[in-house]
Image 1 (cartoon, protein in one colour):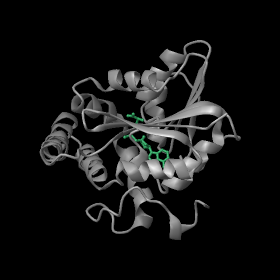
Image 2 (cartoon, rainbow, N blue to C red):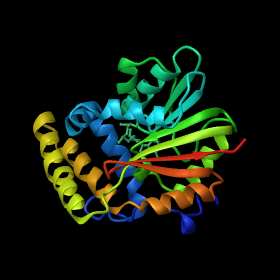
Image 3 (cartoon, helix red, strand yellow):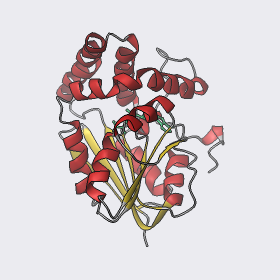
Image 4 (tube, rainbow, N blue to C red):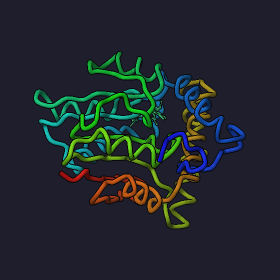
Length: 252
Ligand SMILES: C[S@@+](CC[C@H](N)C(=O)[O-])C[C@H]1O[C@@H](n2cnc3c(N)ncnc32)[C@H](O)[C@@H]1O
């Protein structure tokens, strides 16, 4: 399916009226929000996860089978937390490229890491076919325009035998888990973000963060889109009822 075929876009969630009124405005809203909050992102995420976020990302990469000699593309790299773990794991023999749509996020990454950084949209990757052994995307699935177009691009730039790892947050299935998680993510985290950074935009980032999680297409829908794009052996590994690790292979 063509990415510009608006009739058939597989959007990750419906328009969220509190932030923008229609789907066509979402991309601009999301880009501006991440650009405005890039310099607060690391602080807020560390506070939200009590400092465990980077440890968890590292574990997820190892679980998914990332190996030292691989050529890796980290999509939606943000300030680089996933790319940082990747570069430690692939060390001297492998490589990692970071890609993001937000120039301010890329500037933040460049302050503490030396790696090739590319400003581009995840749905239109500026790389030849079969360029990478491993593709990662951390917590950005909810922000893309079209899941089918996205996974088709990932399939295209993966080498045969290559693997994808998508890390996401998923609202819990149980009623109690949902209520407690929503209270923490929708009330406490935005308050911490506002008080800790002094930025209203950082607070908005975190309320938007939860709202996209709550309204995101459920895991079965994500798995279906991955399979439709040609990925095989598609799986979801769940941690603590809220962390989802989706993996898929481009068969050799
Ligand atoms: C929540 S941050 C995640 C950053 C990092 N991967 C992590 O694990 O913390 C989401 C990132 O996705 C980027 N992003 C959102 N939509 C994008 C798109 N369509 N293409 C590329 N990057 C995108 C944002 O600019 C932002 O840096």
